[in-house]
Image (cartoon, rainbow, N blue to C red; front, side):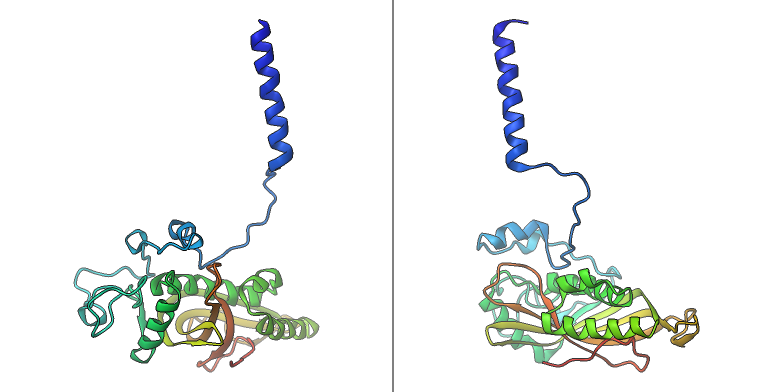
Length: 264
């Protein structure tokens, strides 16, 4: 080995050692906290203050639209509200066969889009759909770590209290979401410099609670039931983080999952 090659080898080894000390190494045990509202294609642009590109946004509804499906939003182009000639920032009206926005929410959606140029109603509902499954199943499993990342602190305190009471009674809950049939934004507003979006979820699920003796005291494990939940998500307008935190919940169906009902 020549002196030049030996010198280069020593320099390379020194660089590798320095980079390992500065950057560290991954050992595969790091826990990745899910963020259902993150969109990899647009997150970097949003953090830099740039407007996301709706053309790069892929809509993946639970039930893909057919060619003969009716045109949504009265035939309007994505992001355009009645009476407006130019698209608003992002996509203001949600696209997707199982996604919609109530007429009464359109003005609030426009206000949020004007205040936060990274807002995209379709992306929000896609994230809300994933968050719904995560939160419902995490609550049944007493997964406090996951719930802390997705719930507003005051709502998390209520959830924690309900889980603690269930644990003290020796009860075991199990909830499985089979499908989310419809998502509708029923209210949108800005309050105290925070965007608030209320979503009505219509889902097929199985929810049961067993007592300490293994007897079912709520629900039927062999029954899939349509349930309706109305949740409100909040996000500070100035925040660059994509996460919308759940701030309030209530249920319309008769068979309750034991989830705390809160209002804002």
